[in-house]
Image (cartoon, rainbow, N blue to C red; front, top):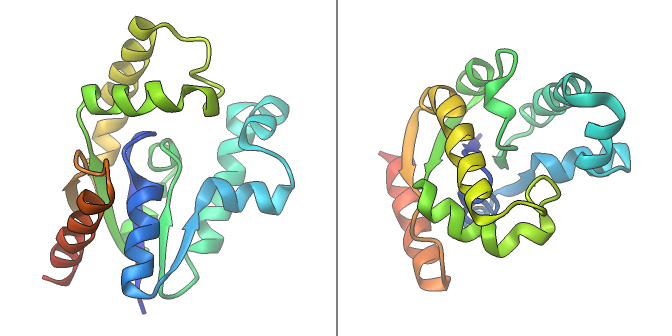
Length: 175
């Protein structure tokens, strides 16, 4: 029975690496945000708007507890998931936690490309985007750092890098 939680800031590669690792290790892959959207038939953004952050974080916590009962699964958590309630302690108690660490510059490059798919970032200038990333990391890194493993997630740009990252993650988790 395996349960792996990938945590880190948006753009760190949780979904990219999680899907590839799940395929390689024959595990089920769950993106927690997608799971929430499927269960509530609304986007995360809609839930945030309707219920405000506190209401959304309560839903997120409940859904985290639900998926954490699954076996042979890798779960890509939302960027804020580890920072609320006792979520980090809970995940550490339920399985392996891996912080996908990437520099603000790498996150900026990835998020700049994906801005149109991220409602919170859509209208940000480059300078504002970098400020958002740096401020969020300053607040969230103390939570992310509680993970059992820290994984350098700066090399996830193409298939070869993703494949190498899967091997590195395999080695990290199997030792």
